[in-house]
Image (tube, rainbow, N blue to C red; front, side, top):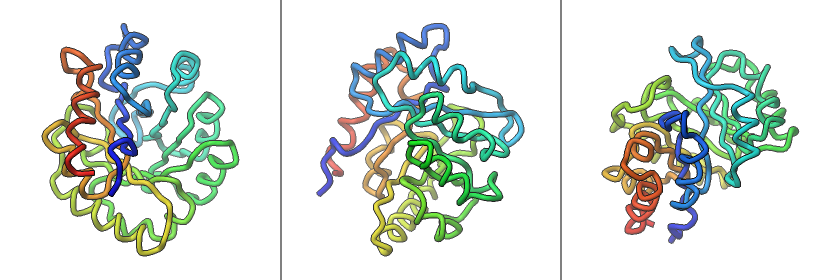
Length: 225
């Protein structure tokens, strides 16, 4: 049985109050968050623009949490290793955005970070069969990428289960991350399906206390692990 302590809670700062970002990060640290998720969007691959290298570099100087940079950008091969240099410990790039995925993943690893591959809701996990051998984690998008506060897509559970079987059947040490619409009502289900890294934005930063919200998310996983 997997211990609840091996489930990473990764608050997404996309939903944080950027005027109080330092305080928000401190709150989730106190609540027991183990990863800080940073969504990087370019207004091209996804219809939104968020933050880039300077903000990641600033955050890295002020938090003890490992930074998970999720690159929702076109041509991620041009920037992936730069996010490692800025302080990211994990960098994921989208299967749909990278024509030379293996090369990009190897550049992330060579730069000293964990490489990950992300897939959109309509992309079958079977497309990742070869890529699984070169990643430390797979990020399953359970909403269409680009905006926070969306509703969880229920078929994501089946997708996670298929991916878990693919990984286990190959004897690989690859973790599954999920991002999109996760809250106290469904976190137990995604963990039971095989998720080990849970990204939550609105369910953390749109609550009265981000610290308490993180604790409650972790508590909600206990019965399933």
